[in-house]
Image 1 (cartoon, rainbow, N blue to C red):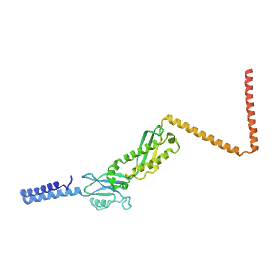
Image 2: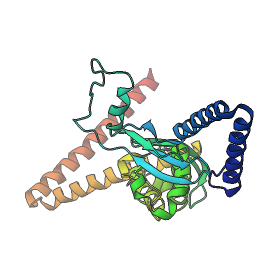
Image 3: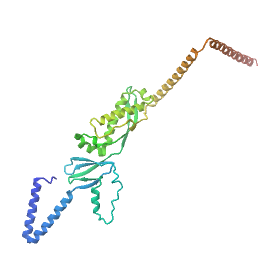
Image 4: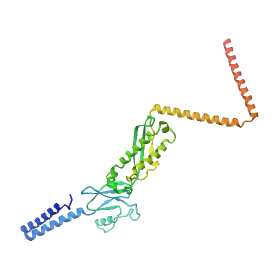
Length: 315
């Protein structure tokens, strides 16, 4: 209801005038006095109902204020940082009447004064918040379905919101900020996984690289235009472990073990070649003699084995 509506104003004036005339005609001066007293009390009640009110908004909150008549956005109430002059101040003074506390509350920076048409409809935390989920059956570039759990921490700062978006974000951020981040985080992660091969996801530091890419792409979506979110560093993005079909994981594990074995053999051969390159002629002759002894020892062992077999057959 709009109190400035001309029909409402005209009806109020007519009702008040008619009541005063009727009271005077019926009870003369006494009736007129009583009616005026009632109207004054009624006007005082309306005035008290529409006067400014105080709402407590602590230093870790942002108040969202709307017009209580047409539900339009009015403003954000950003509480100040802690001040030593107001921290833990004792409001209990001796010989003060209880109503005197209201005067002290007006001086408190954490009590926001609302105008008669304003209403506090929500609060936005300044502290770090988080949202999490799990993307399932996302296919890589080579067609392998994987699942990956994720978690993102974020902080809301309403001062970053451009003026043309404040009325929209004022309705979203108090209760649905996590959904804003969740939708964009899942879309970013899905697009990144679809560009990766299953082998690249199995490599060392694959998750670390993905976390950096997710943080950069996610903040780009939240800041163009800025929806009221601070920068999201890579440390606030947690991914993994990546879940894939068991047979695929077993094949990747086997291939990884083969790669490690091949690497170890190649390094050993490289060290052997380096050692041989440093040998002189005398060293090569000694190696040749050792090789001959090894061959002779092998033949002696084989002859001894054949002798034992022959003796066993004779027995």
